Image (cartoon, rainbow, N blue to C red):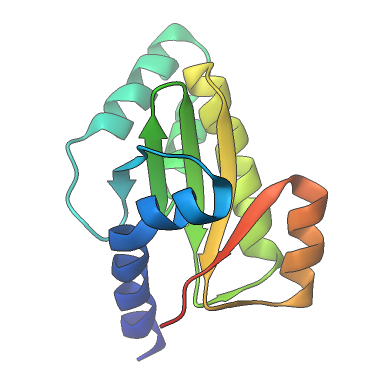
Length: 139
């Protein structure tokens, strides 16, 4: 049951991600280019394959980035977001790590974010430490 609730919440977050980013991070014209719960146009896998071919990242790093819940893009910026109903420190560290890997792959600025209904104290501390933006999206 928890897995089903989590998947539903991830779909909700993907639908509202652009507005959340605009509201919480002040970035306009973002669009979701990858969401784990919805079909996409393969833009992220193609981008990662090119980065592997160019030697900017290794295959394991590309696989790690593809485990991301959401990736958004606008000209000159990517946002990597982890989604969890209750955010904890692990969610924040994953967002930070995956954003760093995507920055290495794209050689463009990448910001990390986490979307949840609430954030545990460990998430708030970790977010401050790793420069990850927490965005609250109520169910």
